[in-house]
Image (cartoon, rainbow, N blue to C red; front, side, top):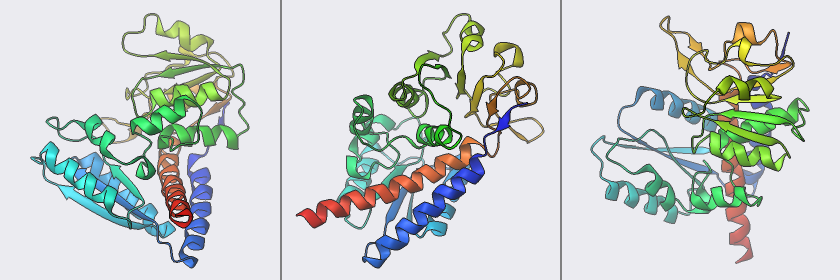
Length: 287
């Protein structure tokens, strides 16, 4: 029976640390601020944004929301990002995805100044991660690395199989795991004989968004399983990418859904806002 990786409890500890750091900054007259841009009426986005707002309030980070209409143009979006880049009171900028199809999200990410890129999505952040420099790491992969630290799961020499190659999770995870000396395989919708890869994995990280996709017969005994997927079943219940009830009988460690990776993502966002605030004020004081 697997040991449950408790993301909820670990996230709480990380948020408490962020709160202490935030309080310390405020004694110096520095008030961390996160600006969130949300476009259109996506219900899931509204829930995510609400959770981010709640976390900011808990920690003491000032939270500003910019709600744009579905028909917003690329130029209007870019102009808002430029305005927030130039606003010295704003320490972090977050563009909530997904955005309407007529808008170019990658172009928008490029416009966010590196020092305020608390989501770790700009080319500068991604490039720094690839060459092993200190940077803003995308929040979900960063949270997963913190889970490995908390449970003393050493990646050195391990076979890590990542299911999914998104810019938000899969691709940054490759670099994070390589930096921990893992041997990394990335599987996706075009991968042949997927089970051959998952069966030899010491660690599987699934981020494909398919309910209960990873079955017990696809994994070996003692595997570590990190489930990034959040899917809502016909009964309205949340499920992950992993067939949890059966896979947990073979795994050594496993994350639940909910209560696993999800809370860590928001905790690491708060961590990144504090980091951005500190770095920006370090720059100001050296001028």
